[in-house]
Image (cartoon, rainbow, N blue to C red):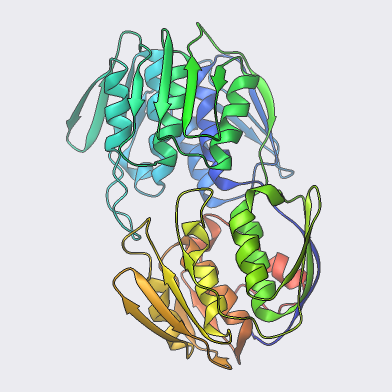
Length: 412
């Protein structure tokens, strides 16, 4: 990409990866079809479809975001290492398989580039619901005649842990209370889909979720929510590069922390029911961020805001509290001329007038997005390597930015 072009125009936001993946796994809870719309065309969605297909789920997809899943004939209750290692969200089959079939064998996820993401809260919660879980040869082998409702207090806020236990509890005997539950909008979207399938769930979006188990779930039709991280990434790109863009099909109420920080940086933002307009006519002001579980500032927006800070007026501190190793993009941004000092889990970013294009390497999904934002404002040409990370969570990002006037293309 060649930087220096302000962004202008409008673009449609895709469906949320972090909502689509757990909702796809929810298909395992019923013999009836689950029909989803607004499913994004992403590498992780394809991996999830492959995992479910390997278990016997019939998965039909079309290019317009329509997906139908039929889990009437499950032939395998195993999530193999080969698939789990490429996508940690594969662990979300554990709760549904255990609830419906009384058994599951799911590979431990293994290492992750951005830090430790243990599954101990998933195991602890399922054990409280009566499951026996033995870890053997790198797999979680789980059994339960029928899960029983329980009170589960999670030691730390975990999105996938909340989702796994909520799905398991829908078919458990009696009532389950999840305390210190994740409040993310994607948890609410999963709950809404499960409720459409006949589940009895209250409190999704708060830190206490109550689930009353039912005997079986039905099929349903559900539209996947818009991707708030894609929305935030496009807004951060416009704030860094300047110009005026309009997002359509967005969900502004899920982006409060991001929009607040963009306004602090000097952007003018107008949010409608499902649209967001941003205009940036000057050099951004430095804004400091500290990541936190929702409704705090999202860890998945940290790299993009670091890119914004590299060209801002003033000094910003960016503190990462969720993942202990999520600053690797800082080293790559330095190759573009950024002035960044790392002190533990905090980056001190002194804004410079201009970045210079260079060859950089993506280390994870959101790091790749941060490097793209930085490349949009760097003088000369920037080449981002290893963009397979980007394709895990962004649907045709280069086409969307290109439609807004960015000089960007994908090269083989």
